[in-house]
Amino acid sequence: EVQLVESGGGLVQPGRSLKLSCAASGFTFSNYYMAWVRQAPKKGLEWVATISTSGSRTYYPDSVKGRFTISRDNAKSSLYLQMNSLKSEDTATYYCAREQWSGVMDAWGQGASVTVSS
Amino acid sequence: DVQMTQSPSYLAASPGESVSISCKASKSINTYLAWYQEKPGKTNKLLIYSGSTLQSGTPSRFSGSGSGTDFTLTIRSLEPEDFAVYYCQQHNEYPLTFGSGTKLEIK
Image (tube, rainbow over all chains, first blue to last red; front, side, top):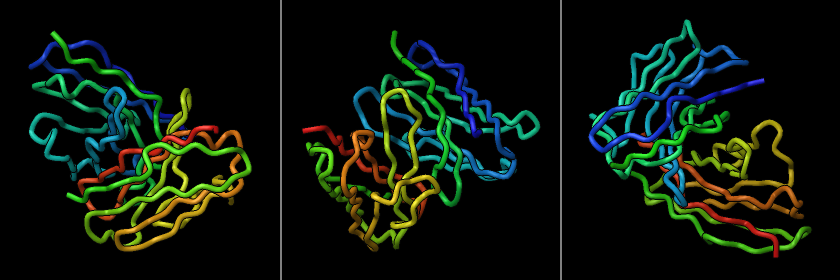
């Protein structure tokens, strides 16, 4: 069974940093692109980042480019999201997702809650 | 960036009825559109990708159609478990973008 389990969420002050982790199991992690998607309270889904199988290619929307960094450790079947210079508008539940094919996300985690507030 | 406009934002229907949800892209995305289902306490579920390809495990009462800029998700003969929030998402190019969601509730 495919499982994605996020961790590392919490309350953080504006301008500070936080790192999310996602532990993957039930599939060959190194064979898949992986992504982070977030959902602000009472809002819809927003794609945050994607990383290629080897980690050599990464993609971000303008809203987080230069502040967020996606990375992976294939030996540990783990995905990460380093979030710097956090803003109140980054408050959201962050989901780890597996990209089945070209931006199609076929498996999702339960999410990690991040609150940016002073 | 490709803007995705989803409608309606809210839909009420009864079990057994059929419903359709629309998703329009701000420019052509060929057939590269996915549909997801969101339910409380469950992980998001991929229903359809590439416009009309059912993901393994998606019931046949779900169907997707469209190409270019206009797409539709149709659910025939609604089951109680279908009442949820549905999102469209274009997977033609990065940045990936989602529609704003449609909440399907029991009438």
